[in-house]
Image (cartoon, rainbow, N blue to C red):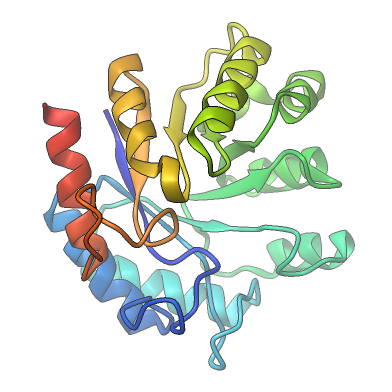
Length: 236
């Protein structure tokens, strides 16, 4: 069972002073997560001002820094549409990358997701297909690309009851897709869905991207703390 560390997401330092923004900070947090049991890293690339970025130089700086601290550990990035809203620009940036991530998380509810997946696959980059709702699952199935994806990333919104219902709808819509599933929650549902993933024998993830709190409600000091807590749940 893969435990992926999601280091920062869209969070800022105003939410937590330990959110890793600079490449060296991301590398340090990645290393701490790997020591505690993470088998892959998911990170949102930032530029020198701290804004999310898909620029060639920023992607290279981030990947090089993390790989130097975590050799052999797969590193993936986000390509969310909010980072670069124009699809043609996102695809052009993918083409410009000189240092390639091991995988990229693509949200299927975003416009142009299937074309983005095709471009990534053409470049030899793995794809985590992000499924936030049942219509996104149908979009993935209709694209014919599901079985070419590295993983199906089932992502659930905050709020326990609604998150559970959303998960059941997604799972039913996905049907018999052969690619591995990675299930995770956000905020209030984060820890609940680590437990659910373990019970389903799905991969899961944890990190500041998903929650700032440990299972006991205390504030986590690092991604390593969160991964250690998730590992204990999975092992139990």
